[in-house]
Length: 69
Image (cartoon, rainbow, N blue to C red; front, side):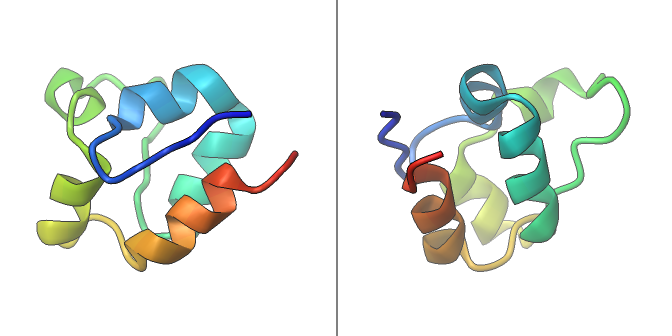
C-alpha cells in the first residue's frame, strides 16, 4: 500500500496510482491535463502545489491517496 506524504511529487502519484491518482488530483483542483506535458509540474511536490494554490485540501488528498483501493 502506498504511503503518500507532503513531499511526494505529482509524478509519483500518477506513476503509482495511475487513473485513480489522476482523478484524486483533479477532485482537489490539480488538473494534470491531457498528456501532462509540463515537465516542471511533474516534479512539483504536493506541498508546493498546495502552497501555490494549484491544489486544495492537501490533507484530504493525502487521506484519499493513502486509502485502500
